[in-house]
Length: 466
Ligand SMILES: *Cc1c(COP(=O)(O)O)cnc(C)c1O
Image (tube, rainbow, N blue to C red; front, top):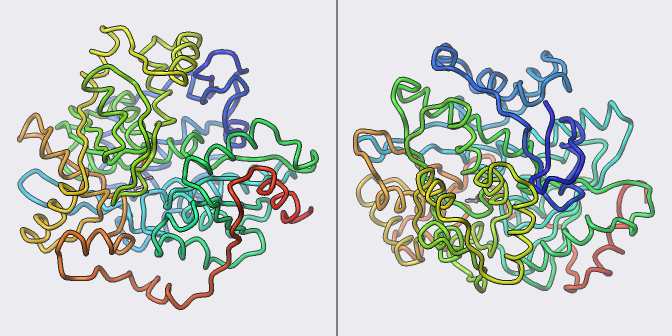
């Protein structure tokens, strides 16, 4: 399998190199040159498989001969055995034909574990083979950081530096990052917001001279192709559990960087019958504004009760734009260069095509709280604020009651107790047993100014062989 850049100029790469590369050299994102396609009979034959067996079938074409099949199988078995539920991604029913897929049974209680538990193992496998070392540098508004740290804590060939906005992530989220012990784990709290953190990461990837040529940066943010790949699997898993592929499914996806929902779009293109994909955003609604008015325009960042979706631009949206433009990299490049300067639109027929693929909704904090309370009152089931946005958008956008509507449950409610309290539900969501002592564990992090030179100097000084 070969991978090409969405901006059309960077060289095509194989799976191993795509794994280790962040942004392509032309500023684009890597996507598969062509997608595997499964017919209904083949998908049907996957009924009853364990999660990791299904994961092998869905992902193997992307990995191809980069990893021998037996090694990849073993890696997947290990990856999904760390989840605290036998079904890995259990489905919970809310109402007739309405479901939540719980993607928060992994070590850090958010869906990002699905990809990052695998990514850590993939990286270490490839680096071991190549006798190389990497520094993972990432920015997090909360969930990515802890999932990346958990995914890499046992990697021998990786040091990981995670930047989070100082005092802008929930206490549970911070503790999940800062209490993980390991020589190769480094938490940096930046006096700034998430976008400041992200900008420093981006710039560091653009110029890695601060590492003195002794190691290289690797990305674990959602632009890393392997993360998208791992997220395709659970769309197949949900469908097969509810009578697919002989009936189609609808999915509602709490969306920030457009990674998770892009995986759903790929599942559909790979042959899975999906009749509706709902983009659910909070008040940081650039995607909803684009879908409803064909105007792609950055607004000020808003802080909401769903901080993992507090972003101004959705980096993975570029991957969809690439397809909407007939995979014309130059057109994408021009469009996004213009988008950096001001609002842009795309040709009407392309936009109409996007509207056929996706519905969208923006849900504010009040509606988020109302939904948490409503579902609790109806079902005694607690939603986290991100999942609540998905459920609300699913209800607002639903096209066909006969089609099962599945909201991706992206985080465990215990990660966001403040939002649950604000909703008026008087029970406190308990942390699962494996995290019950989180508030007693010792924390380790360094607070640094919002200044790239200081951050880079810190990294240069603290990685393993520095
Ligand atoms: C990361 C995250 C999201 C957004 O996912 P994207 O792939 O960035 O769209 C939604 N909910 C939670 C809880 C998250 O951690």
